[in-house]
Image (tube, rainbow, N blue to C red; front, side, top):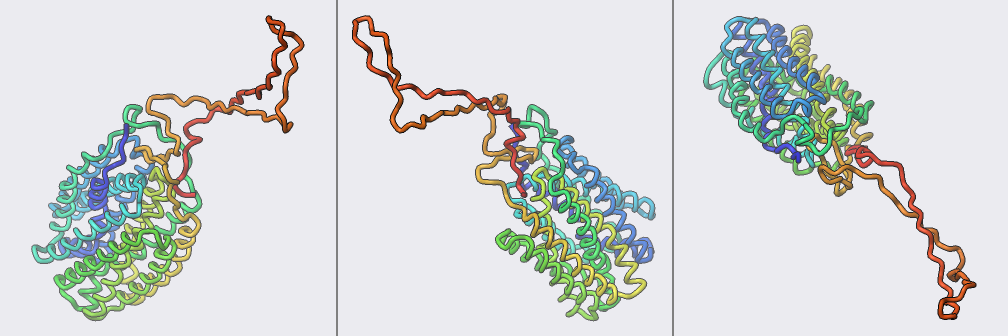
Length: 460
């Protein structure tokens, strides 16, 4: 019999997969300093890393079950250790880029496995919230530590490699490939549900993530160049911002979906637009810290609801992986877009353009949340390990489903029971008493119902 993936293992994988995006500002800034690159060139390296991560998600969508969660996760973690370790030790740009892309592919693989498993959980929103809580706490600790230890790009990449290595033991809680021996039934080859809503959400999230990370990728430069802060001060602001963001994630987990998903996603995106505008115009510690702290408080909250919405579109986790990859694609384009906008128009104009874009993107995001809603499975429903939902009727393991026979009972239309009159007498010469006629029972064989007929969807 199969089992649902252990939540701690999924949270650990989520942390290892998302950490690279959280460390993006310090990676871009330190790569530019250590290799003497321009801000645009350094942003392009960060984009290459995250683009490789998005490619992994697009490659593994709907294939995690076949490959096996444990095997896929360990392969991704191994690639992350090798790739980021190579980038940490690199002294030339080509080797660093190659290592960053290999490590990014490993991070994307870990994220795809985590997204698939989270979609199969009873409460995907809570699992996503715990994952964001974990990665935010780790990134907060690293932002407090990295600026005080050493300079150069070694430490950020080494931290990514060490995190992937530390997560490896947690993969024991994941399952192997889906086979007849460890799965109650094979996952149906059904088309993606909510195709139009899922596609609209994926396309919108590319632009949403690009706008967010266009600012995040140049936030370090805003703090040092425009606000006049030191790298230690900027790192401290990021650490405080991520620490306060933990409170937002905890609040989102406590509230859950009581308010629905449309209000947190729509109103949260509009509030983020204001924070982006404030942060991009920062000219001192107070304005820079206010914008970054407010933004990092709201961003993981909205992201947790978006990830929960993606998981609710398909209980097998395919939309969760695809939409997560779309988010990684937008994240990959963010540093390059932010560097180009900042270089050509300056930080304040860049912030204004990103704020307007986020306000416009709030409309389709809210529409998808209102349309799909992500209703949970009905009471008593079960899930296979593959994530495919099964209705309340679940055949025992190893027993083939049989056709169901129902009986139609014809009820006489007369008020009094009908009697049959016998003309023959019994052996003793006494005429037998009349007997009531028995309603005829006729078996009515219904069409055979396959196991897929009992399947229910978690999102209507």
